[in-house]
Image (cartoon, rainbow, N blue to C red; front, side):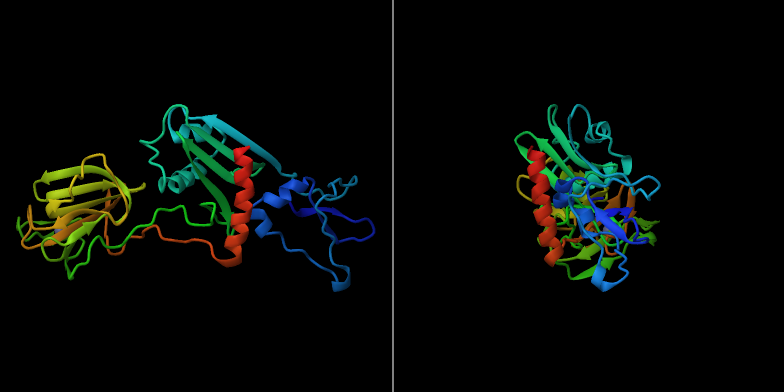
Length: 324
Ligand SMILES: [Zn+2]
């Protein structure tokens, strides 16, 4: 932390002097500068002194604060996976999971990484979460920056303070009604057997466009028993989605294609086991089918106002450091 109680002034017991040994750190740290420790003030006329440059040299026997953060920039070349590379830079597994999610909005970490791509990080050691991370793939680079909220929760944002979490739409089409809910056990109208219904049925006229609810990669486009004409998408982890009973597919859509959120992938129909035109829509988290109407979806939690401006300014400095 750039500001911390480092010394008590001789003869002024209880008074805290905030110091920072590395002046440059104070100007660029994102999270800490926003959340300085509360400064106890004994009286208004004699407020605690704040110094950016005074070195923290405690006299013998005096209280010694946490170690002065040391700014470190490190890079590694991608050889195997993103995760391996991040690990080689000393990033812990929880943070790797957070970063994987943060980058998933811009990079498909399973497909887009190539030998020779680089991962660069800025740390304020001993903090374990990097302040800034840059993933360079080919000629493009993607940056994320750490933000710590007032509860101490950390998230990564884009340089402008926008959420790095990919946004999801709740509904893939304009539908007239939910004709069948998600349920663990229902009497299937076609097979007349009791079975689970792993999605929702959204009634709409044949030919209504069906949109991808989030960006993703097409893992299946074709016909399957029951589903009829179906498109399956692998969305940013851990999500995947299924769009079934389509009358036809969007022109040119192929296995392995990348689709954007909102892109038309097909049209409502009643192919497969359907008793009328509707979209059968599934959302899975890992292998578990969730109720698409209630499942928690990554939302838009961008920063606002002064907080956003300050964040963007500090991210700009860190970005320049990453460019080195
Ligand atoms: Zn259904």
